[in-house]
Length: 299
Ligand SMILES: Nc1ncnc2c1ncn2[C@@H]1O[C@H](COP(=O)(O)OP(=O)(O)O)[C@@H](O)[C@H]1O
Ligand SMILES: [Mg+2]
Image (cartoon, rainbow, N blue to C red; front, top):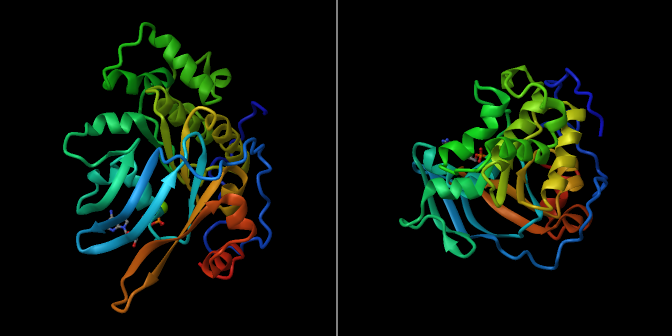
């Protein structure tokens, strides 16, 4: 990997961008997809009959999904099919959305994540989230990474070590080690996104949720994040929403394809169409809607 960070961080992706024609042939696993998925995911997180409303609008319904630990699972599908909505259920981020209401079961290690006895802050420490647009705080690089350990009351013996380890873990240390006290805003977009990943891993999560983490980045910064994801999956469970099918094919072990069809009242509710190994989804999908989507004839 090169250390040269381009200053083109806002160049839009051309491959897999909304409305762009999709490649018929999607290359699989060229990013050292080092581990074939086991037959069945172990269910570190499980969704049973998940249904999410925004006030009266039913955004997603009937989602049953089982995530495997230390795997990368991709959630794909056309815009508005509920990918972000489902992702936000996985660490109770939808609690923060006015009007959002979650039904069904979300289980983490078998425990109902929405049970009244569950500590939401602890849920979000163990299941961290990285967003579409890098969102570092207006603080120094160091303080961004130390933020999580401080606010969650972790009392590490040596905060410097925690910060250094997290920055190493996010493949950013070499680029920032001499300017830890400088503002995070001085970093490029790709570096800021890796800083956000460092901030997330500083609190020792088990799961990292990523919602289109590369959509604001140029291809070189995107490739670095993809390499990083594959590396992080040795330690963490990763669930990523992406509109970039090549990205899903390159980094993930399993893929869930969602779509939203209008019902008789014209209401579009997102549904899970197919969930399988990524090679099956992109190589020989079972459902015609999946095939239509990945070959660009739909969505
Ligand atoms: N905060 C919100 N309030 C109301 N409706 C929302 C909100 N967020 C998403 N929706 C609606 O829920 C549906 C699913 O959206 P979303 O999960 O963002 O889809 P995706 O991430 O697949 O593009 C869409 O119809 C969207 O308009
Ligand atoms: Mg989304």
